[in-house]
Length: 286
Image 1: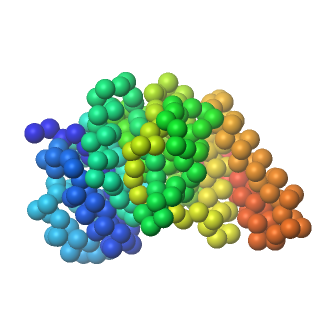
Image 2: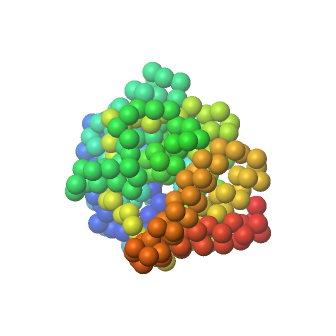
């Protein structure tokens, strides 16, 4: 039986969350013979052994131990082994609704979509997580991709990912520019004319971790600065709406909260400083 879905999971430092994710995969209302789980293990040797043993007879698991760190690099590594027609990269602390894959496959088979973005909810509150996801079905474009897509909420046709050469391994968690590997992939896909739809009736779960501490805001902004530098160099004007939103909010926040709220002032200041530093540093590689 052919593999329809390859679920590629980079993981480091999480056991309980990974076990919960695998359990949600095991509970899917989907033929398990048609999916494979590729775990790209960046942990010390033996860290996940008990988890792998627990699910090895329930799921088709390929356990790949690697000696490097980096989410984008791990996803690309897993992609090399993927046999499925459709690819998904769930975070190791995310989980699926029972009908997620069934709904995604139906859309791929009945429409000419290259990728499908889905809604992300916090598993406790059942409210939109990480982004303020819309309840309206819409095509992804230059004006909304940064509001509706994250690396783990988007399902891809394998041939599209291969054509795009996967994620840029110079961006994202585990690199100096510790974000925006997803934004970069979507921007490159849009530039090539890929047809990407956002469907809010398809759900995956992930804890809502917004409002990170000041240090992370700065490091995430490094990624945006690098993203901006890369796509301006590539003359991809699709980056401009995101730039106006990201930089504009930072400047307005600095002005408004310089007197009203010092904590929020530092947040927006660090976003702007991180963007500027990321843009300059990215000149060394882009």
